[in-house]
Length: 98
Image 1: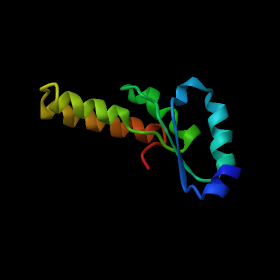
Image 2: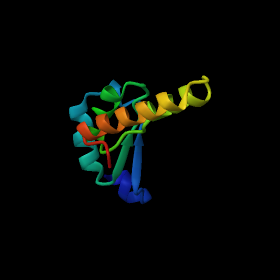
Image 3: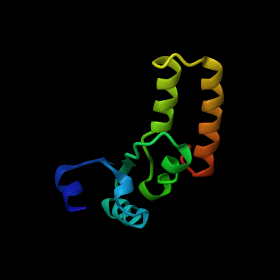
Image 4: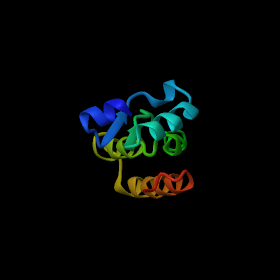
């Protein structure tokens, strides 16, 4: 909270969130008193979005991997559309849908 006040941060990005327990992040974010987003570098939406309640939000790496597969790895748009629906449903289940 002191650093947030001293430097006027309006948000924080938390690196390598899974390396510390979810209980810690919930208290940390609450103490910081500003918007927070966490990095959970993984393509599994259930795993990644499961951290959203503890950090407030997460970077959407499952979406990144789905887009990469569709465009850089010569996937198809039908598969991407289905993947997007699955990601949206998982985000909603975990409260990570904004």
